[in-house]
Amino acid sequence: MIADSSSLIIFAKINKLNILIKLFNKIQITKEIYNEIIEQGILIHAPDAEILKNFFNNKKIEIIELNKNYEEIAKKLRKTYFQLGIGEAEAIALSLQEKNKSLVIDERIGRNIAKLYDLKPIGSLRILLEAYKKKIINEKELRSSLDEMIKNKFRIGAEIINEFWKVFEKLKKEK
Image (cartoon, rainbow, N blue to C red):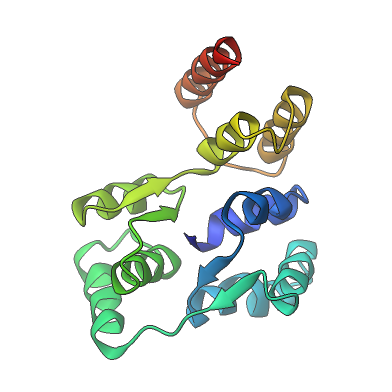
């Protein structure tokens, strides 16, 4: 599974990267995303950077190099959509390069642009629901994970949280 920076950072901050690994086995990122989440994080002494570095060292997070064509696509995405971060642009380009339709991305602009390229963005909240559905986490863990995300400044609106709980209640009834 390909992921952008912010989703990896939030799961590291709440110490739940194992959820991503259990769901997808391995996470793929670009060198630029690595620099953003690990190199820059270590410079500012962010605890999540060390956690991410351990997953990288244990080969659970893998760097895939963008070839020249897709490097150019990432640059064009940034020029065309000035609000798009480099992590999101590279994650979209890597998904296109690897012909992997799904990618973990939270920022609304990134998700919308990914859809323009016929990709299927999956957000961090969807990850929690999928982990619950596949019995990787239970309801208590799901609730505490969401609480921790919010405490760690995961930007999310009230209407999205309400929708999340509606979907969760449906999932509970299906079990």
